[in-house]
Image 1 (cartoon, rainbow, N blue to C red):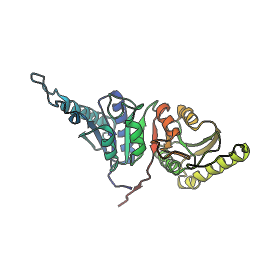
Image 2: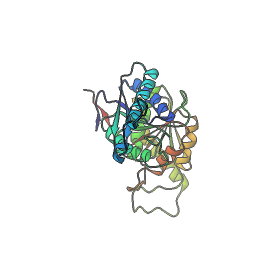
Image 3: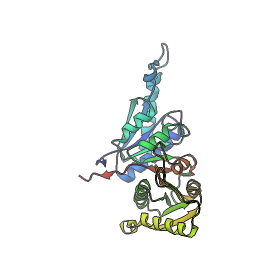
Image 4: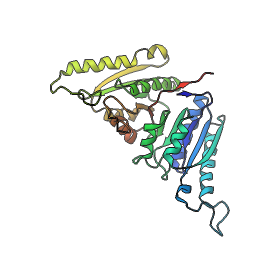
Length: 298
């Protein structure tokens, strides 16, 4: 799928402080990418047949629909303060958060969510909304959590899978855009099954396994140094739990990038164990990459 010229950065809002943090980040991302910003609130109440207007005798502006519109208006005002030159639009869309966001992702350049909220887009980090959106969105999903730093490297998790290679490509582009160094991390403990039914050896040579992992890391990074000569890049092979290693790396990073599913992921899982761990425990904002998209230059 192709990102068309003018495709917006989309941010989900629900009136919470975390959502406004996401709006500020999304506005800066839109400015850096020279794209418009689209603010979206999923309005679930029509599905419940709840009264949407103000009750009799209530003050002007009361009612669920008016509240939803205020959420969007506040977010637009915050975006205008953060990035005055970015064109911003806002909309209240009837529907539940997950399907609304996934529909928005079809025509977006990037999807931005906060890490917690009032039960809307960002409020269910430990529930289903963020996990399902990150697993199925048609664009990279930026989750705003932890400390937002202007310095520190862009860290990308590498394991040789197709999703991982897309994450590496995204991370190099992002590091170039931010003027930041890049650290590519490949962590391993044991041989990893590539697909269902793979039989792993009971005994294996650690040195040979480390050499295989080193080769896989070098192959994943091949060509990117030439394509992005402005990005100081280093790679790090670490023996340890990949999720835990990336969470530790996030303590000094400005951004962590991971693929939605990695090597050996089971088809029935929404997210791989590594991306799931980083999503829940990272100390800085993170991007989960699932689908490759090309930019339409026409």
